[in-house]
Length: 286
Image (cartoon, rainbow, N blue to C red):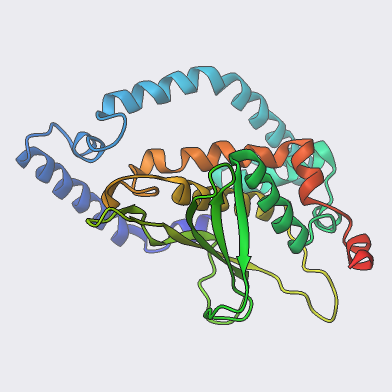
């Protein structure tokens, strides 16, 4: 980790120092006292001072807890390596070791309770119940790969069509390897008075079933898919008049808030019951 962090050495340091100087000159030419104030103005805090005040407040509230947790990690390293100095390069490794030591989790064992099909069907059911929506899969439609599924989204109370989304969640060669949402069409009012409905696609790299064996997800992958599908629902539920203000076209520091809040459903027992089941039992039942 240390060697990787020093890749490029002094040459990169010189480039970064020059970049800082150029950014500062740019900000001063535009009437700002520093580049931070220039960069943060369009965002919710509006000034770098507010950001620093927020960080200081969080630091005061979390410093005791952080120090206690760091002490535990240092003790773990001492047990494994003796009287060795604890560096930043040790942090991620011993955070993982600390979790294993604290709760004795077997990731492979937990994974067997999250078959992809059950996770997706349970997640769709949850969002329909939470937001009074109805998802209808559209069969026999032309898509870019035979594993891609298309759904229409309806308001369950008014039966209004709200939009469409594609699920392109299974891995394949040459595909983008990040779990994310792409807005294919923004919703807006048209000049003739009709509404253009939003369309989105959820991309992921879930494993596919092989020789009848269930495709399984690690729990962090379950949370990640749930988080990204929250963006899909946010996108499709938007009723903006103008495309510029539709759904995901928000300030970057606010755009993640709905999904960050909704992903916490993954830790509720009622949600886990809907999205999980022992894979061998599910295999037998299907």
